[in-house]
Image (cartoon, rainbow, N blue to C red):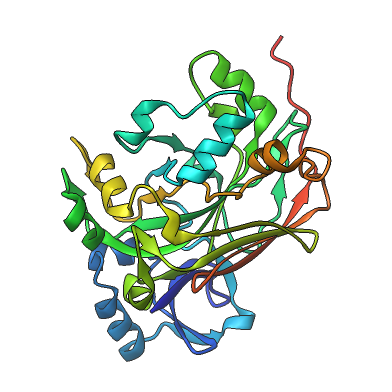
Length: 308
């Protein structure tokens, strides 16, 4: 199954919708409420949608939102080894040994979630704006202290995640020992669909799925990786994230950047002149096989307000 969140023309409110060919079968409730009610069993929600649809409209006419427009929390991991190795090499460092012992993550801003049709403004004051091509798992059934082999059962579905990053701001923040803070506070794009795990089962490979991940900037291919190259599986990520706390329906768990999946990595491994930072007017297309494609236009940011 493929699900969306969309804004209904009937009442101008957010609704969950089941995709049926090229149509959206809407439910009366938003996606977060659907996840809270049905957990990871979205097949039951699909039965309700077909039996008692709120409305039915063509996908082309639907105003799509992020699959979970207001998630309770967003954790972003760093689970692809190629990206970590290359990113560290770019700053003259090596991978910290702890990275191989446990998955690591940071919390990012749930209020900064954008949907498939939203432009992305450059973070205030940044001149080194970047994309990061990722996958996100969305929690359906709540869980605490999960075992890696059972944790995947708590996933309602997967979607594309784009972590928009102000590298210059990030460098300053993290130099103090905290962050990334304003380096990644402005925007995270999710979408276009929430795809249930059963849709991917035949592509299972390694710790992920044998599904390609690509990004282009203004029509030129920048990134090409594969979900199967995960070092840490989503089961392991969820198990770690749930230690001593409860993952809630709608929580978003990001994979971190796939290998070659950001300009920071590309500029250090292939040359900064060939991979400049994003500028207003740039169009970034990001695709993950079976999860869909996003097309995002970069817009100017606002000037930062002086602090004194």
